[in-house]
Length: 440
Image (cartoon, rainbow, N blue to C red; front, side, top):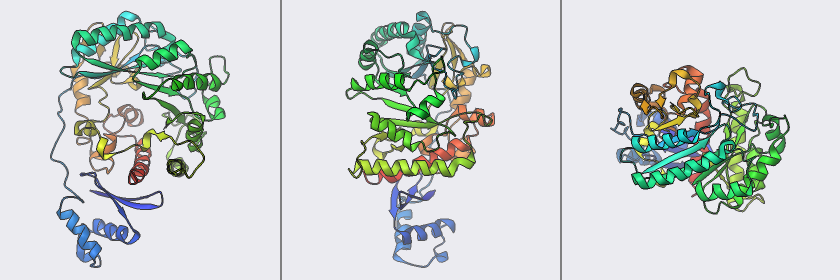
């Protein structure tokens, strides 16, 4: 399969199976389009050196190469990553919050994860991780800092378990940073291998969708706390993570605002919402959304070359490099939700990921009871780009791994049917990322 596309004023061809990327001039793009459209029937296009070069590349397995004869194991894998929903409560009232302002529709009796549940979850992870030594734990909410004392003790317990089981945990926290103090910032920077800082970009955009519990704008508190963390991060990973909605389709300006505010690593994600919400995205908005991605990519390139006065920065969805691609299993199976990855509620209930919390049909077990539903795990393990017909024929399959199962279920009621709107976003971002990588 060959995908021919234009991005940043240039033309490219991606050989899907090998990952080879070719930059094309106008004539080469026209010839290759003719060849692929006619099943590589060379009689359908005018004979030329360009045709012969493309045919030679194809014969050499570098273009239109055959699908890899490999399939991921369908049996459940070990659990290697866990999201701990340590607080089903929040100090903000974000209007678009998928978790119902942190309460997850009252899906848990506890609003704060007790210490014993957190330790049981970490012990569960250790026992279910098989021979995997490097594990991942994300503190999530709601707002995890509302349960900071227990989170700190969970990390201490995790360090003890590392020694007991000879494993290594990479801890991450996702926080709105409104409650960050100097002490908390120092602790985050000492203990968290990664930190996701939720802030939406321009003040007016952030405050419109992210008021505090009293209905007031939260930008100042979130920005101050997030920058307090970033100032002490050193070389450790972090992202300032925003959300765009129907109200800010010019979200490239929010990404640039975050960069200029002092965040060198930025991610701005499309909102996930029911179609009847006033801030929901839809297909009619795609041209404007795509234009915003184009403008963002163009400005990032300018800044990287010193052709703009703005601060250079990294945008999460524009990162792709053949030298650092994930392993084949990861590319086939995506995030591993419900299989290698799971989320735990304050009561210890296990779900495929944090976005499934509250959907009771997806409850998989409980860490206190040390139980896990193998049938649900097997179902998620069997879902990959080779078993999802829409994904198998998609040119972007190895870069997205089949998309988000929670989004698919929300949109279509089936984790095997990808959400078409999410697919459109992914493809657009990937084309730009590939075009930008051509200059690296």
